[in-house]
Image (cartoon, rainbow over all chains, first blue to last red):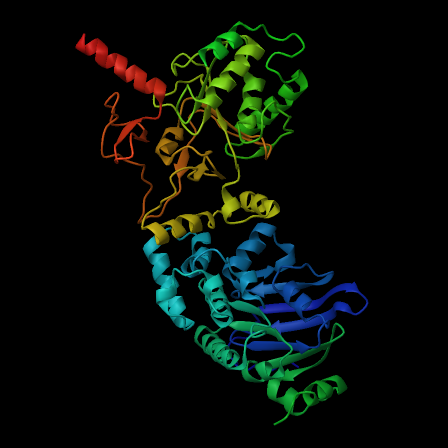
Length: 265
Length: 294
C-alpha cells in the first residue's frame, strides 16, 4: 500500500504499528499502521470526529495510545520508541526533531512576545546564548516565510491571521525538525492567503526534505500538497494511496461521497 | 513614632502568645521545609503557610521564616529597601521585639538574623549570619509560562531556555537587558531562581556568600534557600553580558561610590540628590569620615 516516491531512503522516519486510542466506541482511532518517509507529505482527510486530530497527537508524542507503538528514526543508528522513552527525552525530541503547527496560530505562539522572540525561543531552548546570532536567524526565517523582517519586533497579536500562521511555521522550522505535524494549517484563512501558504509549505518541504503529516478536511489542500492520502472514517482508515489515484479514482464508498461532495467547476 | 516604639519595647510579651508568635508545630514544619530547601539549593519547597497578623504582600513569608528560626540569643535586624526606619521595617522589628523579647539592632555587623525586603546589606555578610528574604512571586518562569503544572515540569526537566526570551525581549525593547530587579539566577548549576525583588546590583553578592540565604513567599507558600558558599550565576547572553547599575555621582551624604543609591527629588525645580539606600552603611561611612576629620 505504501508507495515510495524517493527510492533512496528505505527506512521510514516515523513508523506507527497497530496504534489505537479510543475515547469510546468510534471516538478516536483503532489499529492503524502508518509509515512516513523523509520528504513525503501525507494528508489525513476525513469528516469531523473521525479521529484525525487524535491520531496526529498520538503520532507527535503528545497523547499516549492505548495499544501499539510509535517509532521515530532520525537516522539508522538512532531509533526511538516514543512512548517507551522518558518524558525528558520525549520533550527534547518534540522541541528539536518535531514541528507542530496548530490550527489556531496563537495556540502555537506566545502572543505577547515579539515575532523575533517567538522564532528565537526554540533556539534559546536548545542552548543558543548569542543574541546577535538568534536575531539573525529569526530575521532569515521571517524572510523565508515571506514576512517583512522589519516587523521582527512586532507582537503576533498585531499580525493578520495568515501572517500569524506563517510565523508559527517559521517558529517550528527554526530548529530544523525532520517531521512536521500540521493540524488544518489553512483553516480559517481566506482563499488567496490559503493558496500563498500552501505554496510556501510546498517550497519548504522540498527545500528542507521534511516529512509532513497534514490533517485537513479540505480535499483541495490535500490535492495540492500531499503525495499520499489517508481517508479516515469513524476511527478507521477506509482508503489510502497516492493522492491523485485516491481523488481521481476513489474506491471506497465514503471516499466517493467525499470527492463527490466537493463543488465542481 | 518614637513614642510608639518605646511603648512597644516596654510592653511585656503577652502570655497567651507563644515565643515568636507561631506555635511550635508550625515552626517545626517550616524548619523542615528550610532543611529540604538547603539540601536542594534553589528548589521551591511548598509549605503550609499560616495566617499572620498582617496582609499578604507585607512580608508574611519572611515573618514566618523569622518566627521559625529566631531564638532568645539572636540579634534581629529588619530592612525595607535597605532602610531600617521605614514603616514596614519598624513594625516587623517591633513585632518580634514584643513576641520574642529579643535584642534588635540596626547594625548589619551585630545582627545574627536579618529580614530584608529588596536589598542585601552593603557590608559583607559573615558565616553564621542568616538573611531572610520576603518574596512576592517565587516562580521566575511565571512571566513566560502561567501554568504552575508546566513550570514545575520545566524545573524538573531543566528546561530553562524560555527564561532567556524575557532577556531577549528586554534587549529588543531597550537595547540592553533592562530587567533591574528580580533578575533571574541559576543556583548551583541546577535550579533557576528568582532572587526576590532585590536590585540586580545585589545579585553578585549572592554568589558564594558566606551567609545562609532563606527566601519565603507567604501568599504562594513556597520556601527556597541558598546555602553558604553556593554558586549563583545571573543569566545573560554572550554578546550582552550581565552588568549592574552604575551612578554618575557618589552618595550625597557619605560620598560612597560603590553602594546602591536612591534618587531623591528635592523640589519641583529639577533638584535631586543620590543617597545610599542602605541607611546603616551610610551612617557607618559618615562616622568614619567624622573620625578622620576629628
